[in-house]
Amino acid sequence: MFCWRQLEAGIKLAKELTLKAIGVVRNKAKPAAKPDWGKITSEIVIDSSLTKALDGLEEFSHIIVLYWMHQAARSKVPLKVHPMGSGELPLVGLFATRSPKRPNPIGKATVRLLKRRGNILTVKGLDAFDGTPVIDIKPYIPGCDAVADAKVPQWVTNQ
Amino acid sequence: MFCWRQLEAGIKLAKELTLKAIGVVRNKAKPAAKPDWGKITSEIVIDSSLTKALDGLEEFSHIIVLYWMHQAARSKVPLKVHPMGSGELPLVGLFATRSPKRPNPIGKATVRLLKRRGNILTVKGLDAFDGTPVIDIKPYIPGCDAVADAKVPQWVTNQ
Image (cartoon, rainbow over all chains, first blue to last red; front, top):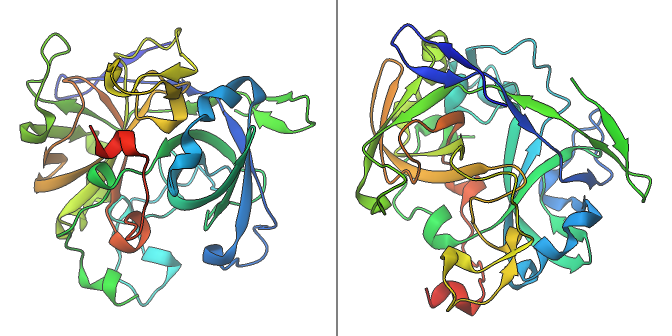
């Protein structure tokens, strides 16, 4: 369902959009610990009604996972943050960071696909806690997703 | 609001998740035409209450845009598709393609950021029609988003 509200500039914005989880993350990463995400292997269990929609995904070495960061406190979205929560990094706009505290708490990870068995994908490096709802899976295609000459600010390279 | 339904495997999935548009795409791309997306310049007009959250984004050459593909018929989501709608390409699972007809019609584009002026981002190569709701903006960070040794199936390289 689309509702609209009128912005001051006369631009109509969809007010509310509804998502459904298509699956869930299963791993040993709990919010209490500080996981070394690069080393974590996760299973993504997809709703079994969608199993056939995964056919052919196993031919890709990497996939993009969009997930709902359900642990992020959505009521308190700051406009500026220190990246990685580090006071040593500059205070920058939220959208210039990958902070989970976003207006829409959607995470995007590019991960290695180790295995697909029916409706279960085994991946490495997914930075999502156990129980995280998954909302989309896309194949990683270098021509769409990689940029050869990208520039980033110094605080990124200094991390 | 989170609701849950019980899957046969005993896995709980969030049933419904609510998004809000944070902005809208403005360009000359209409569904009736077949735009050459790589050449199209778009403005992304962000809700002015979020202008400060864009501070520092202009230091990145490229950004990731998540958007709501409102033109995609959500009621008819096929499990298998021919990529790019081309009968010459093999029939594969929906999640092995970038088809807009997805359970959650979220598009992901990596685009060049040409300019930021207040709450308006000017970008090149965004494959979204005029009026598309934008749901997130993230900086493109090669260490997170690019993969050096990715493998893709032959139908991708033959396109």
